[in-house]
Image (cartoon, rainbow, N blue to C red; front, side, top):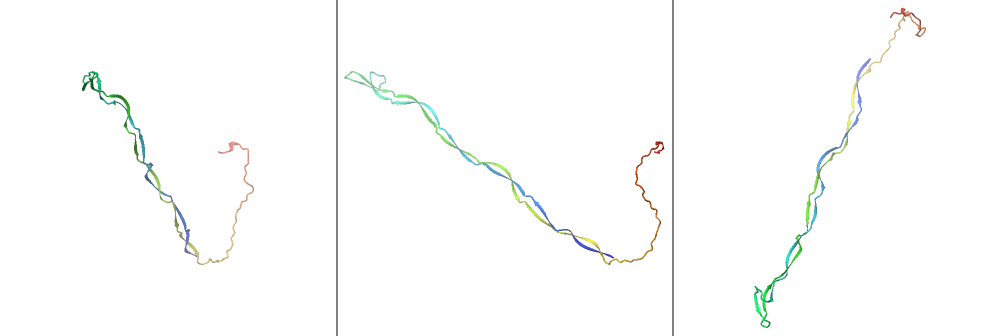
Length: 189
């Protein structure tokens, strides 16, 4: 005699699952100096100009001249010689000269250049790559099984035998093909 029982078994063993997390990046935009500020000095040469001018070589002066001179400031008569002397102004002496005159002195100009910046984008690591271990618990299931409640027993009885006649065929030869000459009119198709 059989009975029924329920047994628990492990349908899947416990294990470990690994989840790979890729690194996480963030894109940031920032300004980078591509050329620093600097000062350039430029030399501006002096500017000269040629100037032509009249300069006095000798100043006008008062001199005594012999003879009568119209417009004389003073006249004198020399009794010994009988000459007349006049005090006249003798014109000054002038000369035309060309000279180089400094118009603008040489100088050094300072030119300031500002720093130049460029905007760039770059990826920044926000989170490192990692492997996460996730434990997988064992799974259990139940199965219904039959159990032997009482062992089988044998009851033996003698039964009278029965006989019967059976026709039996026996193979004499294997199948085979045979070629025969026939009249085609005798064949029903």
